[in-house]
Image 1 (cartoon, helix red, strand yellow):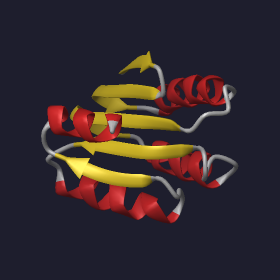
Image 2 (cartoon, helix red, strand yellow):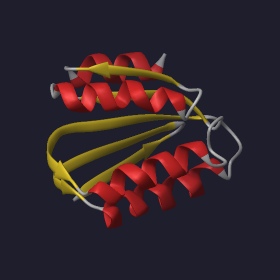
Image 3 (spheres, one colour):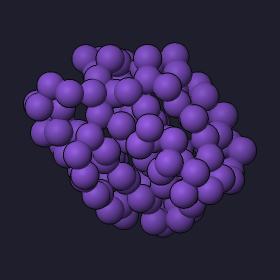
Image 4 (cartoon, helix red, strand yellow):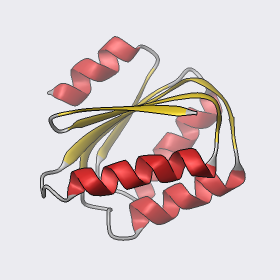
Length: 115
């Protein structure tokens, strides 16, 4: 399950429990709507409550960011303490030219992504 908050050029996605393809498609639909404005968008993925994700989510993420959205995001903050998710966030840099950083504290991620 995910929640999405949208303020100005910041989209905040929090994942709780299992992150499914339906959840990612909900994010994707929201991001596509947001990108119609033409401005670069910043993202926060708060993954502290994520317990697991389905394999099709990882594939869909690669397709979404490497397709036509490689240049649409300015900053992407990932909030997690999980080493595997940290590694995956760094791997995502291959598919998007946004500045991607991993944080263990939400407040620090929010501060960075807003600057």
